[in-house]
Image 1 (tube, rainbow, N blue to C red):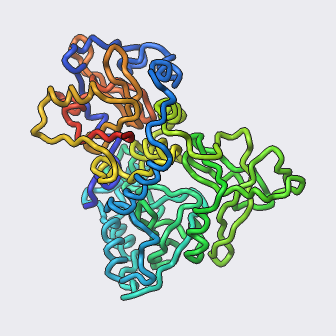
Image 2: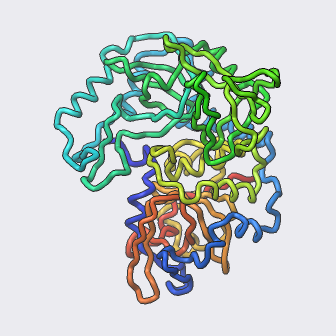
Length: 468
């Protein structure tokens, strides 16, 4: 059975929670009509409310050189990452088979389809056969590609969505994550029907549809990522300008943190894809030819769109402002629904400031490249409370399968922003309230409990700090 830790289990854990306001009594935090404890006015749902409380909101926490060094450590020391440039010119069949078997593990629980009906018993055999493990050669030349559009990465080479309960429509057990335009990958295998590719990206290895990847040389693939100058997507997502002349780059979704080479030598008086570029940035995007090969095309990103000519400085103010750009976005398990889940949320926020992170909560919480404070069963309730009350803005709080980002304190109590299915807490009368959120939300930390006896703080596994 594929472990839940393979993807951040951000919804079910939250809905199982129940609560206390750490050692201060349940009625120390108000419960408004929304049911979201501690959110007493709409101003609290704006970034300025939290930024104004900071003593040094614009102080740079890590310089770009320090961030680059941390990213290098991450790539070289974190076993969940893949240094594509370091892969040999030839891939061994055993390595490819191990990658596939690691991710393509069929769930042991009964599965249901999108209509809540049990899936056919033949599905396991069908999707397993599509892996075509018998076709993995003993040795093959290493092939490279670039992702050309927002691409779902799947456990198996199928679009079929499956769930472990008949009333669940969110957590597709075959959905792993997504990759974005311009992401380099190694193409390691293809499905039996030839419609899917097994790809290895810097942060993941899984199946994606063939049309999502254009194959090119290593020089083309790695050269694209190194091109300067760049535009960095700093909005929750930005779309390229519509163009009927080049549909491959028309209204292409670009998520927060995506870096795009700028074609600075483009003549300003010449149209790009049928449109004047004077009110837009001209960027270069990878496209796929009819033969599946890599080519490049200019595209337009409006100057008014939320982008930057460099990664944003890593400051507390930027951490808050970037996080709040997702407030209210629908929860998307494995980056589904054109959104993201809890670990995807925090990694996209930090990526807009140049900080790279592992994909999943279980890997983020223990990464040797990140500064973290680990907790075990030996840590007392009092020690955990002390650590929670000492959180800084931007600190990431991990419980099993979930991550929250600290944004500030009110009356000494830490508040977090997180992509969550819901929360539970006890009101002043001792009644348990469960609130379904299913979105990026702001909540206090201390009232949230893992179960009827333990708070989220009692279940903390790690605090990660992206600062010195």
